[in-house]
Amino acid sequence: MPTPTTSTPTTSTPSTSTPSPAARLRGLKPDWLSDPKVWRTEVLAGLVVALALIPEAISFSIIAGVDPAIGLFASFTMAVTIAIVGGRRAMISAATGAVALVIAPLNREHGLGHLIAAVILAGVIQIALGALGVAKLMRFVPRSVMVGFVNALAILVFMTQVPEMRDVPWAVYPLIVGGLALMVFFPKVTKVIPAPLVSIAVLTVITVAAGIAVPTVGDKGELPSSLPVPGLPDVPFTLDTLTTIAPYALAMALVGLMESLMTAKLVDDITDTHSSKTRESIGQGIANIVTGFFGGMGGCAMIGQTMINVKVSGARTRLSTFLAGSFLMVLCIVFGPVVSDIPMAALVAVMVMVSFATFDWHSIAPRTLKRMPAGEITVMAVTVACVVVTHNLAIGVVVGSITAMVVFAKRVAHLATVTPVEAPDGAQVVYVVTGELFFASSNDLVTQFDYATGADKVVIDLTAAHIWDASSVAALDAIETKYKQRGKTVEIVGLNQPSAQIHEKLSGGLTGGH
Image (cartoon, rainbow, N blue to C red; front, side, top):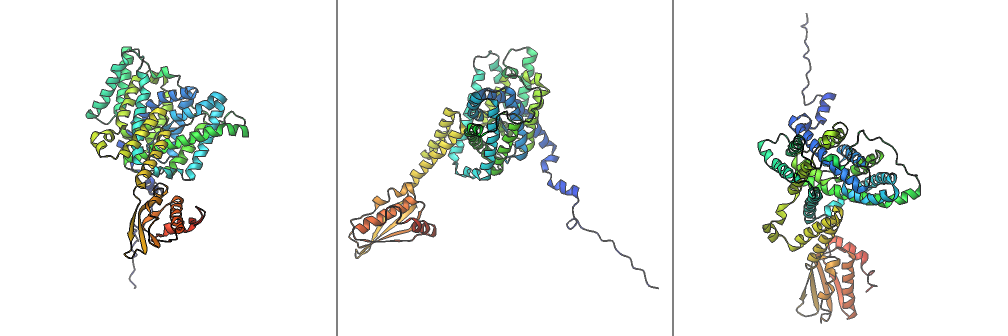
Protein backbone atom coordinates (compact mmCIF):
# COMPACT_ATOMS: atom_id res chain seq x y z
CA MET A 1 0.00 0.00 0.00
CA PRO A 2 1.57 3.30 -1.01
CA THR A 3 2.61 5.63 1.68
CA PRO A 4 0.45 8.74 1.74
CA THR A 5 2.24 11.95 1.05
CA THR A 6 1.67 15.05 3.09
CA SER A 7 1.90 18.48 1.57
CA THR A 8 3.57 21.27 3.46
CA PRO A 9 1.66 24.54 3.35
CA THR A 10 3.47 27.29 1.53
CA THR A 11 4.27 30.34 3.62
CA SER A 12 5.30 33.69 2.23
CA THR A 13 7.87 35.93 3.78
CA PRO A 14 7.14 39.59 4.42
CA SER A 15 9.68 40.61 1.80
CA THR A 16 7.80 38.86 -1.00
CA SER A 17 4.20 39.20 0.13
CA THR A 18 1.88 41.77 -1.39
CA PRO A 19 1.01 44.42 1.18
CA SER A 20 -2.62 44.83 2.07
CA PRO A 21 -4.44 48.09 1.23
CA ALA A 22 -4.33 49.06 4.91
CA ALA A 23 -0.59 48.48 5.01
CA ARG A 24 -0.12 50.58 1.89
CA LEU A 25 -2.11 53.40 3.46
CA ARG A 26 0.02 53.18 6.59
CA GLY A 27 3.10 53.48 4.39
CA LEU A 28 1.75 56.65 2.79
CA LYS A 29 0.89 58.24 6.15
CA PRO A 30 3.50 60.75 7.39
CA ASP A 31 5.33 59.73 10.55
CA TRP A 32 4.16 62.84 12.41
CA LEU A 33 0.51 61.77 12.25
CA SER A 34 1.20 59.09 14.85
CA ASP A 35 3.36 61.30 17.08
CA PRO A 36 1.29 62.97 19.86
CA LYS A 37 4.14 65.34 20.66
CA VAL A 38 4.14 66.70 17.11
CA TRP A 39 0.36 66.96 17.14
CA ARG A 40 0.48 69.05 20.31
CA THR A 41 3.10 71.38 18.84
CA GLU A 42 1.21 71.84 15.58
CA VAL A 43 -2.19 72.40 17.21
CA LEU A 44 -0.91 74.96 19.71
CA ALA A 45 1.16 76.70 17.04
CA GLY A 46 -1.92 76.99 14.83
CA LEU A 47 -3.87 78.50 17.73
CA VAL A 48 -1.18 81.11 18.44
CA VAL A 49 -1.00 82.10 14.77
CA ALA A 50 -4.79 82.33 14.52
CA LEU A 51 -4.92 84.71 17.51
CA ALA A 52 -2.20 86.88 16.00
CA LEU A 53 -3.85 86.83 12.56
CA ILE A 54 -7.11 88.42 13.70
CA PRO A 55 -5.94 92.01 14.43
CA GLU A 56 -3.53 91.97 11.48
CA ALA A 57 -6.22 90.82 9.03
CA ILE A 58 -8.52 93.56 10.32
CA SER A 59 -5.74 96.16 9.95
CA PHE A 60 -5.02 95.06 6.35
CA SER A 61 -8.74 95.26 5.58
CA ILE A 62 -8.70 98.88 6.68
CA ILE A 63 -5.70 99.56 4.42
CA ALA A 64 -7.54 98.00 1.46
CA GLY A 65 -10.68 99.97 2.32
CA VAL A 66 -12.92 96.94 2.83
CA ASP A 67 -14.97 95.50 5.69
CA PRO A 68 -12.88 93.63 8.32
CA ALA A 69 -14.73 90.41 7.47
CA ILE A 70 -13.21 90.52 3.95
CA GLY A 71 -9.69 90.35 5.36
CA LEU A 72 -10.58 87.66 7.89
CA PHE A 73 -12.25 85.54 5.20
CA ALA A 74 -9.14 85.92 3.03
CA SER A 75 -6.88 84.78 5.87
CA PHE A 76 -9.11 81.76 6.50
CA THR A 77 -9.34 80.58 2.88
CA MET A 78 -5.69 81.36 2.05
CA ALA A 79 -4.33 79.42 5.04
CA VAL A 80 -6.60 76.39 4.60
CA THR A 81 -6.05 76.16 0.84
CA ILE A 82 -2.28 76.69 0.88
CA ALA A 83 -1.94 74.02 3.57
CA ILE A 84 -3.17 71.54 0.96
CA VAL A 85 -1.73 72.80 -2.33
CA GLY A 86 1.35 74.80 -1.24
CA GLY A 87 4.94 73.72 -1.64
CA ARG A 88 6.36 74.91 1.70
CA ARG A 89 5.16 73.13 4.83
CA ALA A 90 4.41 75.21 7.95
CA MET A 91 4.40 78.50 6.02
CA ILE A 92 1.45 80.79 6.73
CA SER A 93 -0.39 82.55 3.90
CA ALA A 94 -3.15 85.07 4.61
CA ALA A 95 -4.23 88.63 3.88
CA THR A 96 -1.14 90.86 3.81
CA GLY A 97 -0.31 94.55 3.87
CA ALA A 98 1.62 94.40 0.58
CA VAL A 99 -1.38 93.01 -1.29
CA ALA A 100 -3.72 95.46 0.47
CA LEU A 101 -1.62 98.41 -0.71
CA VAL A 102 -1.69 97.17 -4.31
CA ILE A 103 -5.44 96.65 -4.55
CA ALA A 104 -6.60 99.57 -2.38
CA PRO A 105 -6.78 102.05 -5.32
CA LEU A 106 -8.86 99.58 -7.35
CA ASN A 107 -11.38 99.18 -4.54
CA ARG A 108 -11.48 102.92 -3.96
CA GLU A 109 -12.14 103.74 -7.62
CA HIS A 110 -14.23 100.79 -8.82
CA GLY A 111 -15.62 98.98 -5.78
CA LEU A 112 -15.41 95.59 -4.09
CA GLY A 113 -16.60 93.62 -7.12
CA HIS A 114 -13.61 94.70 -9.20
CA LEU A 115 -11.28 93.98 -6.27
CA ILE A 116 -12.57 90.40 -5.98
CA ALA A 117 -12.26 89.91 -9.75
CA ALA A 118 -8.66 91.18 -9.61
CA VAL A 119 -7.85 88.67 -6.86
CA ILE A 120 -9.12 85.80 -9.01
CA LEU A 121 -7.21 87.03 -12.08
CA ALA A 122 -4.06 87.45 -9.96
CA GLY A 123 -4.39 83.81 -8.95
CA VAL A 124 -4.62 82.76 -12.59
CA ILE A 125 -1.51 84.80 -13.39
CA GLN A 126 0.39 83.23 -10.49
CA ILE A 127 -0.49 79.73 -11.73
CA ALA A 128 0.74 80.66 -15.22
CA LEU A 129 3.98 82.17 -13.86
CA GLY A 130 4.53 79.12 -11.67
CA ALA A 131 4.03 76.77 -14.64
CA LEU A 132 6.49 78.86 -16.68
CA GLY A 133 9.16 78.35 -14.00
CA VAL A 134 9.35 81.87 -12.53
CA ALA A 135 10.33 80.30 -9.20
CA LYS A 136 13.71 79.38 -10.71
CA LEU A 137 14.60 83.08 -10.66
CA MET A 138 15.06 82.74 -6.89
CA ARG A 139 18.51 81.27 -7.53
CA PHE A 140 19.63 84.74 -8.63
CA VAL A 141 18.83 86.29 -5.25
CA PRO A 142 22.21 86.64 -3.45
CA ARG A 143 22.71 85.82 0.20
CA SER A 144 23.36 89.49 1.07
CA VAL A 145 19.93 90.37 -0.34
CA MET A 146 18.37 87.54 1.65
CA VAL A 147 19.99 88.79 4.87
CA GLY A 148 18.82 92.33 4.09
CA PHE A 149 15.33 91.00 3.41
CA VAL A 150 15.21 89.24 6.78
CA ASN A 151 16.52 92.25 8.70
CA ALA A 152 14.19 94.64 6.91
CA LEU A 153 11.31 92.34 7.64
CA ALA A 154 12.16 92.34 11.35
CA ILE A 155 12.28 96.15 11.31
CA LEU A 156 8.91 96.35 9.50
CA VAL A 157 7.29 93.94 11.94
CA PHE A 158 8.46 96.13 14.81
CA MET A 159 7.40 99.34 13.06
CA THR A 160 3.87 98.02 12.56
CA GLN A 161 3.59 97.66 16.34
CA VAL A 162 4.73 101.19 17.12
CA PRO A 163 1.28 102.76 16.48
CA GLU A 164 -0.15 100.33 19.04
CA MET A 165 2.19 101.86 21.63
CA ARG A 166 1.37 105.51 20.94
CA ASP A 167 -1.34 107.51 22.67
CA VAL A 168 -2.45 104.55 24.77
CA PRO A 169 -3.22 104.17 28.51
CA TRP A 170 -0.12 103.80 30.68
CA ALA A 171 -1.18 100.23 31.59
CA VAL A 172 -0.32 99.09 28.06
CA TYR A 173 3.41 99.42 28.68
CA PRO A 174 3.71 97.17 31.75
CA LEU A 175 1.48 94.64 29.98
CA ILE A 176 3.85 94.57 26.99
CA VAL A 177 6.87 94.20 29.27
CA GLY A 178 5.10 91.46 31.20
CA GLY A 179 4.23 89.65 27.99
CA LEU A 180 7.84 89.79 26.79
CA ALA A 181 9.09 88.54 30.16
CA LEU A 182 6.70 85.57 30.00
CA MET A 183 7.91 84.64 26.51
CA VAL A 184 11.56 84.86 27.59
CA PHE A 185 11.34 82.96 30.88
CA PHE A 186 8.39 80.57 30.48
CA PRO A 187 10.27 78.25 28.05
CA LYS A 188 12.82 77.70 30.85
CA VAL A 189 10.00 76.12 32.88
CA THR A 190 8.41 74.05 30.09
CA LYS A 191 8.14 74.06 26.31
CA VAL A 192 5.03 71.90 26.21
CA ILE A 193 2.83 74.99 25.69
CA PRO A 194 4.06 77.76 23.38
CA ALA A 195 5.13 80.79 25.39
CA PRO A 196 3.21 83.25 23.14
CA LEU A 197 -0.04 81.39 23.88
CA VAL A 198 0.66 81.55 27.62
CA SER A 199 1.46 85.25 27.36
CA ILE A 200 -1.80 86.01 25.51
CA ALA A 201 -3.88 83.97 27.97
CA VAL A 202 -2.28 85.44 31.11
CA LEU A 203 -2.52 89.06 29.95
CA THR A 204 -6.14 88.57 28.88
CA VAL A 205 -7.09 87.12 32.28
CA ILE A 206 -5.30 89.97 34.09
CA THR A 207 -6.97 92.75 32.10
CA VAL A 208 -10.45 91.20 32.27
CA ALA A 209 -10.25 90.23 35.95
CA ALA A 210 -8.81 93.56 37.04
CA GLY A 211 -11.03 95.58 34.72
CA ILE A 212 -8.02 97.34 33.16
CA ALA A 213 -9.16 99.62 30.33
CA VAL A 214 -6.73 99.06 27.43
CA PRO A 215 -7.22 98.67 23.65
CA THR A 216 -8.48 95.22 22.71
CA VAL A 217 -8.91 93.14 19.56
CA GLY A 218 -12.58 94.09 19.52
CA ASP A 219 -11.61 97.75 19.12
CA LYS A 220 -10.07 96.92 15.72
CA GLY A 221 -13.36 95.96 14.15
CA GLU A 222 -16.36 93.66 14.27
CA LEU A 223 -15.63 89.95 13.88
CA PRO A 224 -17.70 87.92 11.37
CA SER A 225 -20.51 85.76 12.74
CA SER A 226 -20.81 83.25 9.89
CA LEU A 227 -18.69 81.41 7.34
CA PRO A 228 -18.03 82.97 3.91
CA VAL A 229 -20.32 81.90 1.05
CA PRO A 230 -18.88 81.17 -2.42
CA GLY A 231 -20.01 83.25 -5.37
CA LEU A 232 -18.96 85.16 -8.48
CA PRO A 233 -17.69 88.75 -8.30
CA ASP A 234 -20.37 91.35 -8.92
CA VAL A 235 -18.89 92.86 -12.09
CA PRO A 236 -19.83 92.90 -15.78
CA PHE A 237 -17.85 90.18 -17.56
CA THR A 238 -16.58 92.42 -20.35
CA LEU A 239 -13.29 93.38 -21.94
CA ASP A 240 -13.51 96.77 -20.25
CA THR A 241 -13.58 95.08 -16.83
CA LEU A 242 -10.59 92.93 -17.79
CA THR A 243 -8.52 95.93 -18.90
CA THR A 244 -9.44 97.72 -15.65
CA ILE A 245 -8.41 94.93 -13.28
CA ALA A 246 -5.48 93.48 -15.27
CA PRO A 247 -2.75 95.95 -14.13
CA TYR A 248 -3.73 95.54 -10.47
CA ALA A 249 -3.95 91.76 -10.83
CA LEU A 250 -0.49 91.59 -12.39
CA ALA A 251 1.02 93.78 -9.67
CA MET A 252 -0.66 91.69 -6.96
CA ALA A 253 0.54 88.44 -8.57
CA LEU A 254 4.16 89.62 -8.76
CA VAL A 255 4.27 91.12 -5.25
CA GLY A 256 2.56 88.06 -3.79
CA LEU A 257 4.91 85.61 -5.50
CA MET A 258 7.99 87.59 -4.53
CA GLU A 259 7.07 87.68 -0.84
CA SER A 260 5.91 84.06 -0.84
CA LEU A 261 9.03 82.68 -2.51
CA MET A 262 11.36 84.73 -0.31
CA THR A 263 9.49 83.54 2.78
CA ALA A 264 9.64 79.93 1.57
CA LYS A 265 13.39 80.22 1.03
CA LEU A 266 13.81 81.67 4.54
CA VAL A 267 11.85 78.78 6.08
CA ASP A 268 13.97 76.34 4.06
CA ASP A 269 17.06 77.78 5.71
CA ILE A 270 15.56 77.78 9.21
CA THR A 271 14.33 74.18 9.01
CA ASP A 272 17.17 72.78 6.87
CA THR A 273 14.62 71.33 4.46
CA HIS A 274 13.86 71.84 0.77
CA SER A 275 10.53 72.91 -0.71
CA SER A 276 9.18 73.07 -4.25
CA LYS A 277 9.05 76.73 -5.23
CA THR A 278 7.15 75.88 -8.43
CA ARG A 279 4.45 74.11 -6.44
CA GLU A 280 4.38 77.03 -4.01
CA SER A 281 3.88 79.49 -6.89
CA ILE A 282 1.02 77.47 -8.34
CA GLY A 283 -0.40 76.90 -4.86
CA GLN A 284 -0.47 80.63 -4.16
CA GLY A 285 -2.43 81.09 -7.37
CA ILE A 286 -4.95 78.41 -6.44
CA ALA A 287 -5.33 79.87 -2.95
CA ASN A 288 -6.03 83.35 -4.35
CA ILE A 289 -8.60 81.98 -6.80
CA VAL A 290 -10.39 80.15 -3.97
CA THR A 291 -10.17 83.27 -1.81
CA GLY A 292 -11.65 85.41 -4.56
CA PHE A 293 -14.62 83.10 -5.07
CA PHE A 294 -15.27 83.26 -1.31
CA GLY A 295 -15.20 87.06 -1.32
CA GLY A 296 -11.75 87.54 0.25
CA MET A 297 -9.23 90.27 -0.53
CA GLY A 298 -6.45 87.86 -1.51
CA GLY A 299 -3.02 87.56 0.02
CA CYS A 300 0.31 85.76 0.07
CA ALA A 301 2.81 84.33 2.53
CA MET A 302 3.02 86.24 5.82
CA ILE A 303 6.58 86.40 7.03
CA GLY A 304 5.72 87.57 10.55
CA GLN A 305 3.09 84.89 11.18
CA THR A 306 5.33 82.29 9.57
CA MET A 307 8.09 83.17 12.01
CA ILE A 308 5.62 82.78 14.90
CA ASN A 309 4.67 79.37 13.53
CA VAL A 310 8.11 78.06 12.62
CA LYS A 311 10.67 79.84 14.76
CA VAL A 312 8.75 80.68 17.93
CA SER A 313 6.26 77.79 18.14
CA GLY A 314 8.39 75.12 16.41
CA ALA A 315 5.79 73.96 13.87
CA ARG A 316 7.03 71.94 10.89
CA THR A 317 4.00 70.46 9.08
CA ARG A 318 0.97 71.50 7.04
CA LEU A 319 -1.27 70.80 10.01
CA SER A 320 -0.33 74.02 11.78
CA THR A 321 -1.08 76.06 8.63
CA PHE A 322 -4.44 74.36 8.15
CA LEU A 323 -5.39 74.80 11.80
CA ALA A 324 -4.32 78.45 11.81
CA GLY A 325 -6.97 79.18 9.19
CA SER A 326 -9.56 76.88 10.78
CA PHE A 327 -9.02 78.24 14.29
CA LEU A 328 -9.29 81.77 12.91
CA MET A 329 -12.90 81.20 11.84
CA VAL A 330 -13.76 79.21 14.98
CA LEU A 331 -12.39 81.98 17.18
CA CYS A 332 -14.32 84.65 15.27
CA ILE A 333 -17.64 82.81 15.01
CA VAL A 334 -17.78 80.74 18.20
CA PHE A 335 -15.54 82.64 20.60
CA GLY A 336 -15.92 86.14 19.17
CA PRO A 337 -16.74 87.84 22.52
CA VAL A 338 -13.76 86.19 24.25
CA VAL A 339 -11.35 87.01 21.43
CA SER A 340 -12.58 90.60 21.39
CA ASP A 341 -11.40 90.97 25.00
CA ILE A 342 -7.78 90.03 24.20
CA PRO A 343 -5.65 93.13 24.92
CA MET A 344 -3.68 94.39 21.93
CA ALA A 345 -0.70 94.66 24.30
CA ALA A 346 -0.49 90.85 24.36
CA LEU A 347 -0.31 90.61 20.57
CA VAL A 348 2.12 93.54 20.39
CA ALA A 349 4.43 91.69 22.78
CA VAL A 350 4.27 88.59 20.56
CA MET A 351 5.13 90.55 17.41
CA VAL A 352 7.97 92.43 19.14
CA MET A 353 9.41 89.07 20.18
CA VAL A 354 9.02 87.84 16.58
CA SER A 355 10.87 90.87 15.22
CA PHE A 356 13.70 90.35 17.71
CA ALA A 357 13.98 86.63 16.88
CA THR A 358 13.79 87.27 13.11
CA PHE A 359 16.56 89.88 12.91
CA ASP A 360 19.95 88.42 11.96
CA TRP A 361 22.03 90.00 14.72
CA HIS A 362 25.15 88.16 13.59
CA SER A 363 25.04 90.04 10.27
CA ILE A 364 25.63 93.42 11.98
CA ALA A 365 28.12 92.27 14.60
CA PRO A 366 31.38 94.30 14.36
CA ARG A 367 33.39 91.12 13.88
CA THR A 368 31.20 90.10 10.92
CA LEU A 369 31.26 93.56 9.32
CA LYS A 370 35.07 93.66 9.50
CA ARG A 371 35.35 90.40 7.56
CA MET A 372 32.58 91.03 5.04
CA PRO A 373 33.43 92.69 1.68
CA ALA A 374 32.25 96.28 1.35
CA GLY A 375 30.08 95.35 -1.64
CA GLU A 376 28.16 92.74 0.38
CA ILE A 377 27.52 95.25 3.17
CA THR A 378 26.31 97.80 0.61
CA VAL A 379 23.87 95.33 -0.94
CA MET A 380 22.48 94.38 2.46
CA ALA A 381 22.11 98.03 3.49
CA VAL A 382 20.42 99.02 0.21
CA THR A 383 17.93 96.16 0.55
CA VAL A 384 17.06 97.15 4.12
CA ALA A 385 16.77 100.83 3.26
CA CYS A 386 14.49 100.25 0.25
CA VAL A 387 12.16 97.96 2.18
CA VAL A 388 11.92 100.26 5.19
CA VAL A 389 11.33 103.37 3.06
CA THR A 390 8.78 101.82 0.66
CA HIS A 391 7.27 99.31 3.14
CA ASN A 392 7.40 96.89 0.21
CA LEU A 393 9.54 93.77 0.53
CA ALA A 394 9.34 93.04 -3.21
CA ILE A 395 10.83 96.43 -4.17
CA GLY A 396 13.66 95.96 -1.68
CA VAL A 397 14.52 92.52 -3.05
CA VAL A 398 14.51 93.72 -6.67
CA VAL A 399 16.63 96.81 -5.95
CA GLY A 400 18.97 94.78 -3.73
CA SER A 401 19.42 92.12 -6.43
CA ILE A 402 20.16 94.76 -9.07
CA THR A 403 22.68 96.38 -6.73
CA ALA A 404 24.32 93.00 -6.16
CA MET A 405 24.60 92.47 -9.92
CA VAL A 406 26.22 95.87 -10.37
CA VAL A 407 28.67 95.19 -7.53
CA PHE A 408 29.47 91.77 -9.00
CA ALA A 409 29.93 93.14 -12.52
CA LYS A 410 32.22 95.90 -11.24
CA ARG A 411 34.27 93.38 -9.28
CA VAL A 412 34.60 90.87 -12.13
CA ALA A 413 35.28 93.57 -14.73
CA HIS A 414 38.74 94.15 -13.26
CA LEU A 415 39.62 90.45 -13.45
CA ALA A 416 40.09 90.45 -17.25
CA THR A 417 43.78 91.06 -17.97
CA VAL A 418 45.88 91.18 -21.14
CA THR A 419 49.55 90.10 -21.04
CA PRO A 420 51.74 90.64 -24.16
CA VAL A 421 54.44 88.08 -25.05
CA GLU A 422 56.61 89.21 -27.98
CA ALA A 423 58.59 86.74 -30.08
CA PRO A 424 62.41 87.10 -30.01
CA ASP A 425 62.54 88.11 -33.69
CA GLY A 426 59.82 90.72 -33.21
CA ALA A 427 57.74 89.34 -36.08
CA GLN A 428 54.91 88.14 -33.85
CA VAL A 429 53.33 89.19 -30.56
CA VAL A 430 51.01 87.02 -28.47
CA TYR A 431 48.45 88.65 -26.18
CA VAL A 432 47.30 86.25 -23.44
CA VAL A 433 43.82 87.24 -22.23
CA THR A 434 42.75 85.96 -18.81
CA GLY A 435 39.33 86.26 -17.17
CA GLU A 436 35.64 86.46 -17.94
CA LEU A 437 34.71 88.56 -20.95
CA PHE A 438 31.28 90.19 -20.74
CA PHE A 439 29.78 93.66 -21.15
CA ALA A 440 31.56 95.12 -18.10
CA SER A 441 35.03 93.68 -18.58
CA SER A 442 35.07 93.95 -22.39
CA ASN A 443 34.69 97.74 -22.25
CA ASP A 444 38.31 98.10 -21.09
CA LEU A 445 39.61 95.24 -23.25
CA VAL A 446 40.24 97.37 -26.35
CA THR A 447 42.53 99.77 -24.47
CA GLN A 448 44.84 97.00 -23.19
CA PHE A 449 46.38 96.27 -26.62
CA ASP A 450 49.36 98.07 -28.23
CA TYR A 451 48.29 98.90 -31.79
CA ALA A 452 51.62 100.56 -32.62
CA THR A 453 53.57 97.31 -32.24
CA GLY A 454 56.18 96.55 -34.85
CA ALA A 455 55.15 92.89 -35.11
CA ASP A 456 53.45 91.88 -38.36
CA LYS A 457 51.30 89.18 -36.76
CA VAL A 458 49.17 89.48 -33.64
CA VAL A 459 47.89 86.37 -31.84
CA ILE A 460 45.13 86.77 -29.27
CA ASP A 461 45.21 83.73 -26.96
CA LEU A 462 41.87 83.17 -25.19
CA THR A 463 42.74 79.83 -23.61
CA ALA A 464 42.34 81.30 -20.11
CA ALA A 465 39.29 83.41 -20.97
CA HIS A 466 35.60 82.87 -21.67
CA ILE A 467 33.30 84.88 -23.94
CA TRP A 468 29.86 85.44 -22.43
CA ASP A 469 28.05 87.98 -24.59
CA ALA A 470 27.86 90.06 -27.75
CA SER A 471 29.72 92.96 -26.13
CA SER A 472 32.85 90.81 -25.85
CA VAL A 473 32.60 89.72 -29.50
CA ALA A 474 32.18 93.34 -30.54
CA ALA A 475 35.29 94.28 -28.53
CA LEU A 476 37.35 91.54 -30.23
CA ASP A 477 36.05 92.68 -33.63
CA ALA A 478 37.12 96.25 -32.83
CA ILE A 479 40.60 95.03 -31.84
CA GLU A 480 40.94 93.07 -35.07
CA THR A 481 39.78 96.07 -37.08
CA LYS A 482 42.32 98.40 -35.46
CA TYR A 483 45.19 96.01 -36.21
CA LYS A 484 44.09 95.32 -39.79
CA GLN A 485 43.87 99.05 -40.46
CA ARG A 486 47.59 99.11 -39.67
CA GLY A 487 48.33 96.19 -41.95
CA LYS A 488 48.66 93.58 -39.19
CA THR A 489 47.47 89.98 -39.36
CA VAL A 490 45.29 88.94 -36.43
CA GLU A 491 44.60 85.39 -35.25
CA ILE A 492 42.38 84.43 -32.33
CA VAL A 493 43.25 81.07 -30.73
CA GLY A 494 42.36 79.04 -27.64
CA LEU A 495 38.58 79.51 -27.76
CA ASN A 496 36.66 76.92 -25.76
CA GLN A 497 33.59 75.44 -27.44
CA PRO A 498 30.90 77.79 -26.03
CA SER A 499 33.10 80.83 -26.71
CA ALA A 500 33.88 79.62 -30.23
CA GLN A 501 30.17 79.18 -30.96
CA ILE A 502 29.16 82.66 -29.86
CA HIS A 503 32.20 84.21 -31.59
CA GLU A 504 31.50 82.42 -34.87
CA LYS A 505 27.84 83.38 -34.75
CA LEU A 506 28.32 87.09 -34.01
CA SER A 507 31.77 88.05 -35.27
CA GLY A 508 31.73 90.49 -38.16
CA GLY A 509 28.10 91.40 -37.72
CA LEU A 510 28.36 93.78 -34.78
CA THR A 511 30.79 96.49 -35.90
CA GLY A 512 30.11 96.61 -39.61
CA GLY A 513 32.73 94.03 -40.56
CA HIS A 514 36.52 94.01 -40.42
